[in-house]
Every structure is written in structure tokens, then in C-alpha cells.
Length: 114
Length: 116
Image 1 (cartoon, chains in turn purple, orange):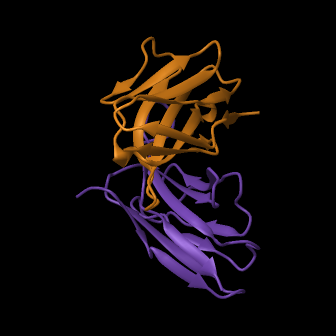
Image 2: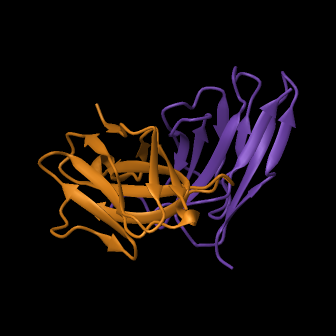
């Protein structure tokens, strides 16, 4: 089945550690995105990528890093510089940027700092 | 500033009744898209409906319709014949097309509870 796969679903991190969240899509979409959701709030854009080997900062990129070495993969690293990383992280993709393109989401990853 | 406002933190509706979830937006872009997503307790974001700023007709998708009033900058979601499975968070989002990016700007959401 086509879709967006995020892993792991649940992740616990010790303070000071980097963690990487995986996002893979087999929809042949050009654009991919990472969003963060805090309890009771809407989503905020962390990073997005239009094509391979290119990505742009979103509204809350500090403390995060990404790579886009393959079209189907867009991993997000939550670094130790991110002061409040406990949140729900959602990966998304769309056929291309701009225009009336629906954005599809993965099932999300819950990150908790312990 | 580009912003989405959802003024209803929570809504209740009786099963089989219709309900309207409010959304207003602010943008100076002449071209933009408006989206509604449903988020059940499991967390995934489910796309419901899309309206383009130049679309002449209101969008409809099954039991979902979008009441688009461009002059008032509102894009309310109407759910007809509510079902118990409609209980979830609902998010309105906007994608301004300046720069050619699908950068969704989300509202804070409305929690809908459907009662039997």
C-alpha cells in the first residue's frame, strides 16, 4: 500500500542525546515536511524539502536537523540543542510544492524526554 | 501576518445532526489553499477537504462541505449527519502559494464530541 511510514511510534530520549525520527514515503512525492505538535495545539512547521539534497527551515527549526539524500526519505534529528523536545512529530508529503496539492501525513511519532 | 483562527475549542453535537466548525484566516496572498484535517485520538492527520481561493464553488466531499466566504475570509467546515466516529480534533489549515511552497499554517483546532 502507498503511504508515509514513520518510525518509531514511541521514543524516549535522555537529556543531552540526539535522536533521529525516520520518515519514508512510497507515493513518489517530491515535497516532504516535518511538523511538531504540542498538546492541545496545532501543528508547526520544522523543516521542508522540495527536492533531493535541498531543504529549508520552517518556523521552529532551532535544535533540529534534516537530510534529503533520497526522494523517499526525510529523517529528522532532534539534537540536544532542542530545549523542549517532548512532543508529537508528524511527517508529511505532497506531489510538489505550490498549487492545489493535498498534503498527506504519516501516523506520527511521540518523543518523550526522560 | 498569516494566521488561522478557530474560535471553538470544543463542540458537542447529537448523532445524525449537522455541525459547523468555524475557521477564519488572514493572508495577503491573492492565491492560497484552505484545508480541513481530522485528527482522531490515535494521532494521524486525515485529510478531509480542500478549497482553492479561486474556486467558484464550495468544496464538498461526501458528508463534508466547506462554506467558503472569501470576502469574510472564512472557511467553515460543515459535517452533515454526524456519526459517533466523527468525534476527534479538527484542524483548519491554509497554504499561501507565495514562493510556491505548500507550507501549511494550522489553527489551534476544535475538539468535536458526537453524542448518541
